[in-house]
Length: 196
Ligand SMILES: [Zn+2]
Image (cartoon, rainbow, N blue to C red):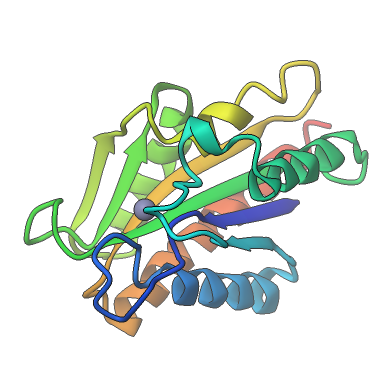
């Protein structure tokens, strides 16, 4: 399984920078080490290399940047690699407000990733994660848009999830979310084991 974690707004100018996603570099690193220790997966992590007001790496205009080109290159490599059966891209963001007071974790689905989003939503509910929301995302989230047709001529599928984490999440809540993510990834590997 190839897991790719993108944090396109993770570069902040200061602690109180309101334009960036203040928690995502830390969340990305924590998710990376959790996947590593619990599933022996080594994700590729993309932290932002540009300030959002200079270049929004999750918009169409940034497709020609080295940062975006490297992501599509890694996905192409994973598609071509027969040893890799699943490709999962987590595009992660964080918010301080904007999704309502109660929101802790928001799954933003675009039309093509709705299945993955709904599956994770159910698993989060089962893990007693508070404040889960699932919304239809904006079509400006270009990382998902660019990659989700890349698997057309391959026998494997790219799954994508766009997740917004609240800046106020406790570590306990974050671990519950990770546990749900890991449960889903494990289900994915076992469900396909016997069909092949
Ligand atoms: Zn963001």
